[in-house]
Structure formats: C-alpha cells, structure tokens
Image (tube, rainbow, N blue to C red):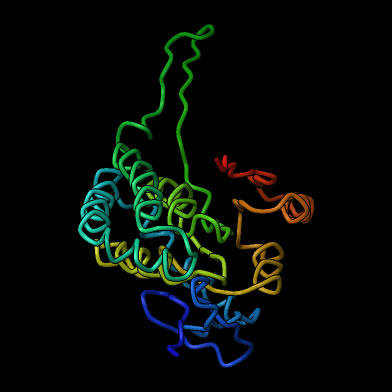
Length: 256
C-alpha cells in the first residue's frame, strides 16, 4: 500500500500525524494511505502561497495564460492515466472518468483567455472633468474544498481561473479519491507554474477549519453536501471572507 503526500511549495511533504485509507470500490480493498493534514501543515501551505503571491500577481496575464496552454496539453496527453486513477478510487467507468476530465479541460481552455478576461474598462467624461475606469486585482491566497464525486472536474472549476487571475491557491481535495487530483496538480507545476502558487493538502474537518480561520485566506470555494456548505459559508463569511458554497446537487440516473 503506497502513501500519498501533500504537495506544498512544489515538493511532496509527509504528514506524520493521522492517516486514512483510500479504497478501490470495485474490490473493497485499501490501496493507499492518505495523510490528514494538521493545522501546522495547512499553515505551511498558506505560508508558501503567501510567499509566492507578490511575484505571481506581477506576472503579466499573457505569461500566466501560457502556463495554462501548456497545462491543457499535458492534461490531454495524460487523459488515460488520469481516468484510470479516477476509476480506481471513485469507481466510475473509464468512459465516465474521461468525460469528467474533458469538462475540466474546458475550464482550463477558458482560463487561457486571461489577457482578454482581465481587461478593464475606461469611460471618458462620466461627469464634469471625471473619467472612470475598472481594474481587476487578485485577492491573494484563496482556497478550494472539493468533493469525492468529481475529483478532476470540480477542482478544475476552481483553481485554473483563480490562478490565471493572479491568485495563489490551496486545494483541499476529498480524502476518499485524492490521487487523480494530486497528479493533475503535478502536471500544472510541470507546465511551468512557480512553486507555491498551487498547493494541495489532504485532510478532513481539521484542515477545513484551518483554512476557514486563517486570516491569510481571503476567499473559499466549496462543493459538497448542504450541511457542510452552510457551515463553511457561515463560518467563513463571519470572518469577512468571500465564499462560494455549492451544496445539494444530485446526479440522477434512470434504471430501465
């Protein structure tokens, strides 16, 4: 049984505390051990993201987009490998896993348009001797907490756009099927993303609460159950954070 690790500041980090088993649903056998991050490990990821932010926010949008172009190519080249990991840990078919990844890649494609997306507006003479303009600025360190049902697609809803806009990101994926999520993050680093811009920490409520309570984390995005969405929204907004909390979705199937 192999041990999964955190990805912090471009390097694998071992957490010596609590662990959980990752199961193959088709056999019921534990195939990996995943670390459940302590607050200290989460803070290590936050510190790495905070240190990487000044240089990344000042990187031209066109150069940030070039990283996303290379990332898209690597995702396509590794499609079968990623789909296999999703299937082994989640249990969905290879075809379904590949379809999930394709939907995620669509978001990376959109992120490639950063130089256009991030254009501001300028209006002359909105009032006597007054001009007005809008400008988009990154928040800083932001985080995503993602569910087990789409381990590739849902994270790719979040961090490509956040990162291409100049933010640094901490991802807390589901501890039930983390391998594909971790591989995809490695591919983004391989595409040329500077160390610390994307960090992956595995964990449970301890890691979630650490992200909610850290003053350095300016925004949180969540997908999962309604009770947890309500908890994250309530706790994070009470601390002045921007929150996107999606709960209660269903994947319907008709059995004939």
